[in-house]
Length: 308
Ligand SMILES: Nc1nc(=O)c2c([nH]1)NC[C@@H]1CN(c3ccc(C(=O)N[C@@H](CCC(=O)O)C(=O)O)cc3)C=[N+]21
Image 1: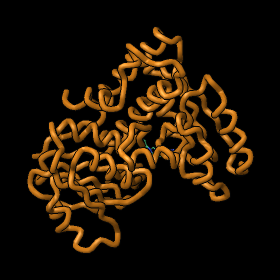
Image 2 (image 1 turned 135 degrees about the vertical axis):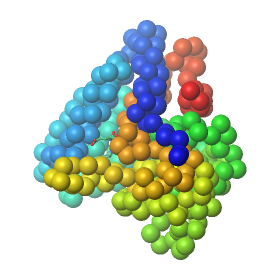
Image 3 (image 1 turned 180 degrees about the vertical axis):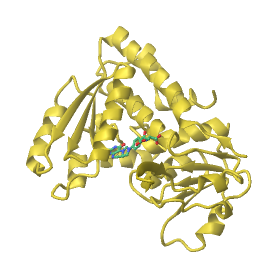
Image 4 (image 1 turned 90 degrees about the vertical axis):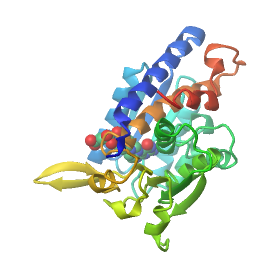
């Protein structure tokens, strides 16, 4: 049986570190790191996610502001709000919950967020910085996956990693982070030929295709590490259930380590969002940082989570 990568427990460790950083920012700079979450419309699933994010924020001492806009909000109205948040010195992170209603252009909304407040890491400047291997705000889900991988592998160098899925929010930034960790990276997707045998050569499989139970046991090399990024809601006997992109029962017989859904990547994503909020603060501090929080840089911080 595969080792279980417990995202719930690991996220608690990350959140503990975030809480310590929040305390340092308070003590050294009298700053309350604050996250603004913008939700347009009334999608019930999005409302649950937003509530979860704000609950976790308050648990680690991060301030949060919720901006609920009605489904008919115009591009100009949303731009106006983001401009206000961009110039508010008491707001350090801005998250606009995606997807947005059809009348709104996601790309231009993302581009209007100040790059140093872009806690999702979706702004083109941050995307470019990540692609170039520079220190920047990194998308939360791939960052969480890297922390999970570091739990299993003391060194990722030279590993064959296959990322199944090529989205801008998971697949592409995931591939960039794995490459930065010196993996040999392949991005597979719906048009990939022989995807099953390609995955079977991988030491690491990241399943982020958005298709329920797509990755089966025959796709996995014995002993490989499998991270399941899928969140597919299904109904069983009238009850809502979350399942991933991996056939968990079958794959856990073959894999060396596997993350579950729920209790895997989801909680790690939220923990990394709050980690990014404290990192956003340090990017916005004008003064040179010498000690305490100043000792924080991406490399040092991710190293803290390499092994428990
Ligand atoms: N700008 C933006 N940034 C996001 O990060 C973002 C977004 N938009 N839109 C929606 C998706 C989805 N997302 C999740 C985060 C945590 C869980 C999570 O914690 N899930 C729990 C279960 C929750 C449940 O039971 O419903 C788990 O997997 O254990 C799920 C989904 C962030 N998203």
